[in-house]
Each structure stands twice: as structure tokens, then as C-alpha cells.
Image (cartoon, rainbow over all chains, first blue to last red):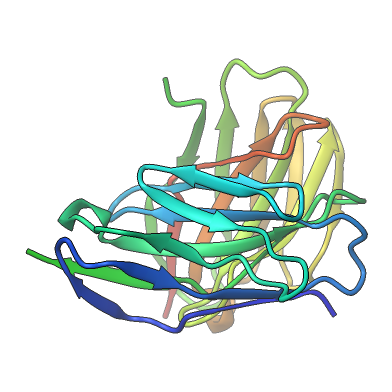
Length: 115
Length: 112
């Protein structure tokens, strides 16, 4: 089936350290998967952080990057130097453009950045 | 400006009691509307979607129902809550043909 697996949280890093949150997907019934990273800051709703709809492309936003790798079925989220304000829950998601245009989410990764 | 408004922000309800969660979209014509739910410790999953007024498709059976009485309104409800309904409910809209979802702030529900 279609699914997303991401780094289990919680993850704690110190400010200015690098970060990688792993995400792998299985898209057996989706012909052209779109990949997304969403973020939920404390007390706020889910926001789109970045998306990539074409395999091999890289998306970036707010210093975060993720590359859609079709060979390894991965879409890891990286940042070279995190800030305390990056503390949030991060969700990797797989988009199915057919039918309901359902988003299939990973379980979310709680990130805490220590000052 | 906030285009999507969900209410209430949080609820504590008794098992067997009714529930109604609301979602309003401002300034968007004929959006596709969605309800998502995340059980505590679980994964966000799509419950319902609606492409047009009066039409709602169920994706996951959870003894919940949804309705779209107006173009800009999406309601999630049940007549009898179960303990398993606890969790976080998110409403979302998407422009037809677009790939981006916009989510509301969510409703946190605790059934006791």
C-alpha cells in the first residue's frame, strides 16, 4: 500500500547544529507522487513548509531543503543550522493526485531546539 | 488574512454525547474541502472530502459523518461519541487542480 515512514520523535538538537529528519515513502498505487513537508508550530495549524512534485528536484524554504529521490523513495528534510524558532512538529506527506487527492502523512517528528 | 476558520478550538465530551465540528472557508470559490484526523500517537488520516456543495465522500469509516451545507462550510458530526474519537481534527481546503492544501488550526477533542 501507500505509506510514509519518518524519523520517530522526539528529536532534540542544540541551536546552530545541523538537522536531518528522514522520510521514506511507498507509493505502489500512485503513478506520480507529490511530496510535501508540513510543519505545526506550537498553538498553530499545519503549514506547508515545502513541496516537490517532480522526482529529482529539490524544494527549499526557511533554510530547510528536501530532495525527491525516486530511486531510494526518500524525501529527507535537512537544515544546516537550526534555530530555537524551528521547534515544531514536522510531517512528511505523500500526495495522490487521483480521486480524493488524499495526502498520506507520516506520524510526525517533534523537534525541540535547545538554546 | 486567515482563509480557514475551525471551531471549536478544543472540546471535552462524554461518551455517547453528540458532536459537531465546524469549518468555514473565506474568499475561495468552490474549494475542495477535507477533514483529517489524528488519534493520539497516531498518524493524520483523511476522513472525508467534498468537491461540491451537498456532496461528501467518506474515506475512512469511524462512525462519523460530514456535510457541506454551503460552498464555504464543512461540518463533521456524530450523534454518539466513542472513546476512540478522541484526537485532533483538521479541516483543509484545496483549490481544484492545485496541489497545495491549506489547513485550519484544528480542534482537539477528548472523549471521556
